[in-house]
Length: 372
Image (cartoon, rainbow, N blue to C red; front, side):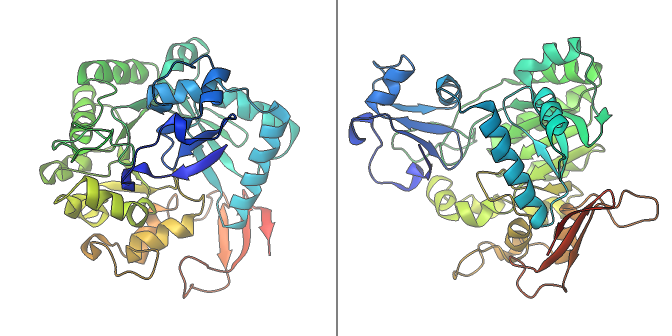
């Protein structure tokens, strides 16, 4: 298995015949495309697939059909990743895995202590099950919290399935992207979740998808999140200012995707990853990583939001850079105050290099989860 290819930048086209005659599975950097060899396709009963390149729903179903590692091994990897995150100052994450996250994390925390608070999202395919189980948003159990219901409007930029107003320039994926959930269906699912005490988290990357997500929130009138919002119509910026709406964005994607965006969204990158404009419009931003698409490292996101670059090239659309104060605010749950849970990260000093601060310690509810 391999991870991280970006065929949106390639002049050639991935195909099953280009891979060795053994089971090979390659996941794209955005996790919306998977590339199988002939032998790997045979493992999951798709030996007659014409190309071995599967996108969006077909990608997720193919990955789910692969033999999984032992549960104990997965849980050990999760524990290792959580400890690494704590060493970078992370005190909590939202888990958007396609799984019964509430049950999975209850099992994990029954075996070993967690160094993180975990907000357990619910895939929209499990919404009815969650309602039947009586799960409600904000319910807590120790360090666990029932989180939002994840819904998809579109795909991704790198897979060229982000749903956009303008067509992609061509190649193996053409057209305007892929609409995963039409407006009426999306609004219906959001209303159902809201009626049962659950908030929606709506994945929308392309400008047309973002507009659909905003329209659904306005129809339903509920609080919730729009995840990614990577390309936004100028006229839609102010719509993010509605009460209770959070824009969950990942600043590390801006420098990561600059080359793909210039190629696939020509002439539109001035309103891509437009964090400064969103803040000016009154939006509430929360920074995340979208790990493993980007490292589970808040400092990587903070540095990218402020500098708009992660290499030796000049800043990409520096006008959309944000202040360090705004970046810190978007990466935390608010300022320190008496009586709040002591979820803290302690740095040696205000870092000269935002990407590599010296973390002296991390506390969760007043207990050390990491000490240098």
